[in-house]
Length: 280
Image (tube, rainbow, N blue to C red; front, side, top):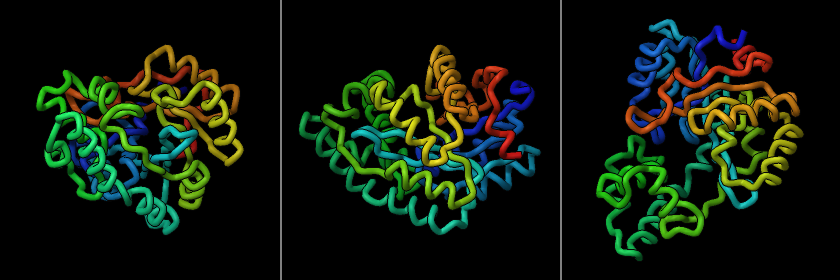
């Protein structure tokens, strides 16, 4: 039964763009009744050992995870890897390559915002960065909300940080082939993260699912805190059509910021096969 296990297989800590350190994140998951969780920081494995130790002490089944940034048809999509071996050199080296260039991109984002009169954003964003190797648009958005440029983070993204806006800087992430190659080399399961949040066209998403399947991709986030309930029905149909396993996730970043708390996402439709059956 899908609804027996409270599994949350996508969340973030301060090692990427979350607000809680790995131990604090695991403790919040435990308080919310999570029985299985994966920490999936962006392009980074650094918080997994600490999170695993805390999870095991609290009786939570812990899954090594990562969320890899991928370029697809001039847009960014995210692929989650679950059950990965953190010692796999292909994965470790691949993620290091993806992280490289983030600081340069961030400085160029700051320059773009300065050009329209919003100055010092790079320096302001740094106080939200827990890992110096990983500065992201979320850190910029938090600072812009703090200084009153916009009322919330989604508004910041829509008006300043997406393609065509002054703070957007194009960046070449991993290819889909590379991301799945690293995940599978590390013995993991590949999952399309929050497909409802991507800005890829409908035809582009169909191409993505086809290529993902052809490369051996196994699962899709049917339920995610980053997409609405109606989208869960749509992506349940995608899972059935392609034979994908179904994942459930909050995509939790922090209290007061995320729409869905860790462990509080909707349940999967009962006819779908949950990805965690492959992770036990």
